[in-house]
Image 1 (cartoon, rainbow, N blue to C red):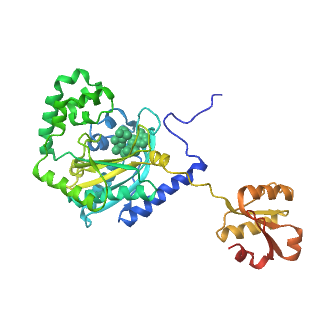
Image 2 (image 1 turned 180 degrees about the horizontal axis):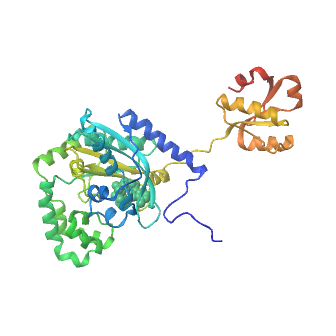
Amino acid sequence: MAIIKVIKGTKDILPQDVEAWHRLEEKALEVFTKYGYKEIRTPIFEATELFARGVGDSTDIVNKEMYTFEKSERSLTLRPENTAGVVRAYIEHGFSRLPQPVKLWYKGPMFRYERPQAGRQRQFHQVGVEMFGTKEPSADAEVINLAVKYLNELGLDNLDIEINSLGCPECRKNYRAAIKEVLKPYLKDLCEDCNFRYEKNPLRILDCKVDSCKAIFEKEEIQKVILGDFICDECKEHFEKVKEYLTALQIPYTVNKLLVRGLDYYNRTVFEIKSNNLGSQNAVCGGGRYDSLVETLGGVQTPAVGWAMGLERLNSLISKPENERLDVFVVAENMTETFKIIEELRNAGFSAEFDYANRKFKKQLDKAAKSAKYALILMDDEINSGTVTLKNLDTSEQVNVSRSNYLENIK
Ligand code: ATP
Ligand code: MG
């Protein structure tokens, strides 16, 4: 019979690697809580319409990357990202009536039908934050600060923080028109995706990763448009403030005018954090402001800003924690006695194991030395004298103590 294997682009997270994942998740809980964020968990599938409207039907995600299926004549999709789901929940549970800002974070698997490669999977994991209800540039600066803090706390500091302002829908109109104009003569040289974007979402062209497209953006007349000054005074002031606050927070950033981000919903500030220690998939975090998404999805107009981080990429950057050894291995002959004492140990909070096959003393002790910090020896001698022997498996030191207070000795 053919062996069934894991699906291409998905991965098992094996026991020896789970410790590293726990660390990312625990650090997220710790840091985000400190910054006033509350965790939210939304379903991993939603109505397809949510993403078509929320992420935007001119995006790669909606056009080619969604896992969509039908059930009871409804079109459903495995979430490719979590912002749309969080916004849906924000609206559905009337969070706009709570004191604002409402600060939420999430973690979990996301699904995108992409070409699998290092740092790119079809099921991958993200943590992310969303702050609703404030249009102030201080919110933009704070969410960027939080991303940097989280990465720093995980021991990462070789980071490139790139920011840009996309302006508001009004000022973007002029920019879009200028980009279309200047790119028009190059359409035949741009890739197929860029040709598609040209009609639907021309700014996304600037985000293209194809080398021959990137080379075209270097042309003088195109650079002039890219570096040009399109954003309106209000948007400009907002961006200046964001930069001022980042400087005050001592966050080093660069302005990258090519940064547009792949999703339709962003306006004003967008940002990406890259690590110099990753290969070509070097972005660990992406985010920005999305002031019209709540309204687009049927809620009251609510400004918002947030980001998402890829945990697989993050994991490949940080050193693996050592696998924990057991606290105690019980070495004994009598299974009834073993069960009594092992449960005492576990109830007292220690991790403890024993030999299910009840093999010879020497075999059990070998096993203990390989897997635990201490051996608790409970052979005939100990049972007769109402004691246990504790052996430190690093130093081989051993003590014989009374059965009634051995737990104190281990502690
Ligand atoms: P990229 O340009 O790398 O495709 P993106 O703009 O599609 O990223 P976002 O949707 O902003 O990414 O997601 C935020 C983060 O999630 C990324 O910076 C990355 O770390 C991670 N990520 C996105 N897609 C994948 C994937 N297919 N596999 C693993 N991680 C991913
Ligand atoms: Mg992508």
